[in-house]
Image 1 (cartoon, rainbow, N blue to C red):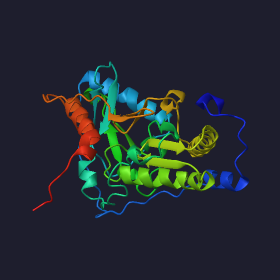
Image 2: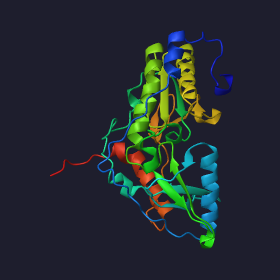
Image 3: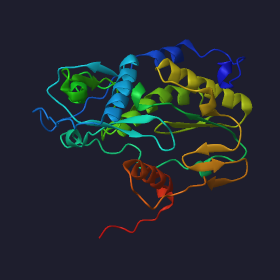
Length: 292
């Protein structure tokens, strides 16, 4: 684990812990309001966007995130350019599918505050890459998250796929993600009982009273996530200040909001996504009056 900046002289985890973190996790099954297939016809796409869609689909297919399907369900897909980059993002419009899924509610209505951490404790932050795409859909639900890839000038039959992992835009994906990652961290909390572990979506904060305790807890956390198939990057494991966590910048003495730029002129869908992301970080500081 040296590539993660974790000390390698820590005793190996107990066999009981290893069994717990590597056992197969059950997948959450969705409750549906109807079994009648929902079909939303695919929009026509420009040649440039269709080429980008084909490349993105091939990428997801190679990673095992999607499979070919003959599902009677269908929702439209489109692509948008990532802000400031010459890269495209695949978007799956699941609004009509969400309408026939029973809402699971929220497991964690708010974000944990690092201001509650003990003073002078050691700290590390892990950012899990593509968290949704590491969590499987229930096999009974997967065919309902299908989409079609048209061909230029209808030169050939369109290809059809469905997701095998949690799709972005499915309303219960955040809840299932919270539950799934929490189930992985539960044995870590028991094995590293001196540490405090905060988890919110794809961000995990590990705090402990000493460097040795932190290294032990961090090692167990990383082992647990990797054993479950999650992809972690060395640059996404923060061990030195300032730590960036849930829109905050944490130093040894202070916790302040990260510099945030909110664009008020919204002209594209990408601008709207950026605005929603920015508002999500400032929500904990808002005070809402009670509903009347």
